[in-house]
Length: 247
Ligand code: NAP
Picture 1 (cartoon, rainbow, N blue to C red):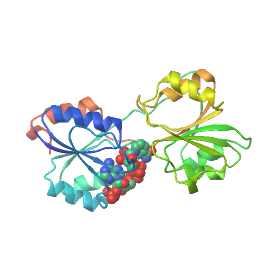
Picture 2 (tube, protein in one colour):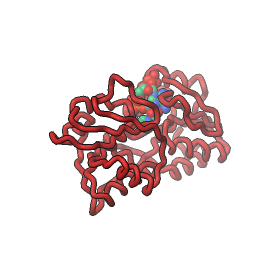
Picture 3 (tube, rainbow, N blue to C red):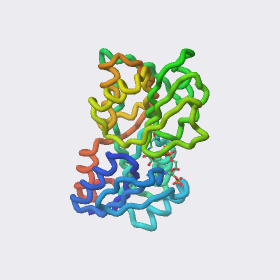
Picture 4 (tube, rainbow, N blue to C red):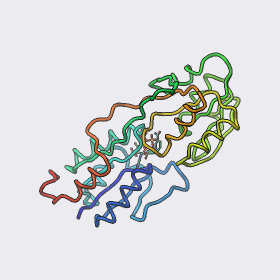
C-alpha cells in the first residue's frame, strides 16, 4: 500500500481519494483553498499552496509520498506544471488524471476560443443576456464587453471590482441537472452561454440544455493534455506491486 498525495479541487479528485483510501492506501488530498467551504473526502486533507515546485518537492520528500496524482481541473495549468517538476525533482511517480474534453454534437452552436479575453470579444457588439460559468477568477475579462447583461454563476462570489457594469451573481455548486439548467436559462432569458471546455459529466448539463434551447455557446478550449490516465487506470496502477510501478 502506498503513501499518496492527490492534488485536487475537483469532484474527480475526491472520488479518486475515497476509492484509493478504501483500497487501503494512505491518501492525502490537497486543496488550493479557493473555496471557503469545500466538500472534503473521508481521508486526510491539507489546504493551501506548497510554495511552487520546490515547495511541493520538499513536501513529497518530507511526507514520504510514493505516488503523486494530479487530479486538478484541466484549466489549472500552474499546479500541473509544478507537479511535473516536483515529481521529477523528488523522484516520485506522477500520474495525471485525464478528463476527455467535450466535443460538439449535431445541434450544438459553439463558438470556440482559446482565452477568456477572446470569449468576451466573441459575444459580439450587440447587447445580449449572457450566462457566465467560468468560475470567479477570470470574470474581469468581461469588463471589456460592458454592453452585455451577465448572470455569473460561481461557487464563491467574484470580487466586486471584477464585475462588468451589468451583472448579477448566482452562487451555486454543481453537479447540475439538465432540467434545472434549462429552467435557469429560460428564467433569465439567457441568449449566450460562456463555458470552459472542462469535460466530464458534472457540468455537462448546461451544454445539453443550451443545445435544446438553441443557444449560442462560447467555449473556451483547454490546453492540450499529455500522458493522462482514467480513474480506473490509476486505481489499477496503485493496486500493482510497487516493483512493477517504476516508482
Ligand atoms: P493554478 O493556477 O494552476 O495554481 C495556482 C497556485 O495555486 C499553484 O501554484 C499552487 O500554489 C496553488 N494550487 C493549485 N491547486 C492546488 C492544490 N490542489 N493544492 C495545493 N495548492 C494548489 O490553479 P487554479 O486554476 O487557480 O485552480 C485552483 C484550484 O481550483 C485547483 O486545485 C483546481 O483543481 C481547482 N479548480 C480550478 C478550476 C479552473 O478553471 N482553473 C475550475 C475548478 C476547480 P503553490 O505554487 O504555492 O503550490
